[in-house]
Image: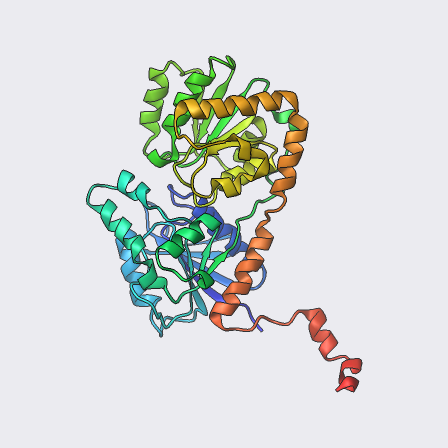
Length: 393
């Protein structure tokens, strides 16, 4: 039996300049599905000089239209009973807008909800679109009330239930970590306290709070330095903020980094900082842990679930720069006492997360949604046709 033919609707793809964790997740799961004999086509928006189609890690990426046109194209070409050769369509809702408007799609469908944006939309989106996006999330129960849904954290599952989604339809599948890439190296640590911020530079990510906390921290750790990795519309404002606080030599913006360079930054850092208002999971916290680096963060969204027991004491309820600086100080003080034990505990925790296990969970659920029986493994198939089995009949 051949593999599934899967269409994955995601607003952005991994080559889009604003690609982030959702796009990383899509590519990590999809490339493993391809290796197992499935066919995956990712449909995403057209942008700039990106080609109409690409092949990435065996995954076909098609960009049929722009941001709004992609939704219209999908509803015409993918979400009807005659929608081509696909066995199942994945609706990735990482960018809020539902791909369908009502329940009962004739095409087998799996929805992925990474987090519910809620108040972030009202804070960050333009004055007219913010309420519209907020309302769109409240329509999920009408669009996906009869659809299996994957999310990454129990906190998101509870929020979806509050929006009217049935608990039995919501499946929690944790993201993974590429342990061949993200692994510890004690010799790579900076000689002085190095703090690392990784993420898209948008207001809700809290880059400004990280910089203000850094100003407070330098009074305790005079050699501390903050590296900000990521790109986004907030960069110029954050650079001005660092300059205004006299932190030009204490804060470095490195922009977009490759995964290899990101792993090196995690290994160099003493502490990874995650000052977001809310996160649907917190992939960077797991990657940092895999490199033996603890995370200091605010207690919001799924971060209490993702940082793990070692970093949990360094979560703070109060979303202020002084509270964040105090948590950083506590973490740095402990690192001064038992760095090796802390690193080993973090790595042990991170080993619970593996992209191969994540892909297996997706594969099983996709087979169920597509109502296609998975192929019988070779060992099982052989045993069913063996003489002993035949005699027992």
